Amino acid sequence: MRTTLVKRLRHLRAERGLSQVALAERAGIARSYLARLELGQQDPTLGTVEKLAKALRVRVSRLIE
Image (cartoon, rainbow, N blue to C red; front, top):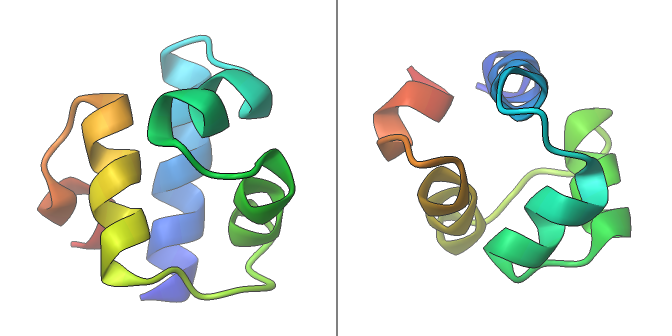
């Protein structure tokens, strides 16, 4: 799941033209935490995945499928 999430998260963020700072602010998480997620250094909680999906305007399943 981690590899899929990492790739999709980066792809969707870039596709929407968002910086890490902008996505982190939209999702209500720290930019440093988002950076660790995108590098695959940390696993997100379900709550964080939900926040990111909402901020990216996608279903949770799109991030983790």
